[in-house]
Image 1: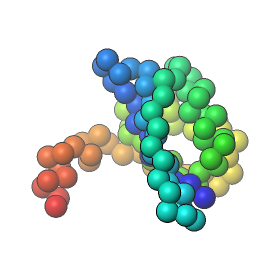
Image 2: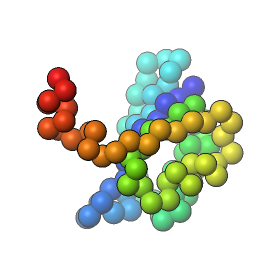
Image 3: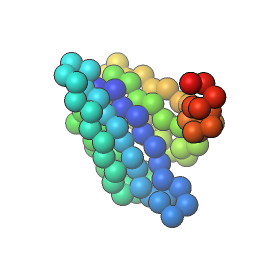
Length: 95
């Protein structure tokens, strides 16, 4: 059982994908960054291998929500968050 958070690079990091996955049965957190294409082929492959139960990502992804929906993973839910909820200033205000 995995929970996954995904972020896509912008600007000079365009085409890069960052992924954090946590194994919910064992306390193991894995961070990875990799170059991917516009159809998120490598990301979808990793999602199919890990079989997550939830995927969290920012709403500014262009194709990711469609790509995640098209995977063959049963019982997958995903949550979309606005980027403003993850800014440092927002974190400091909420602390």
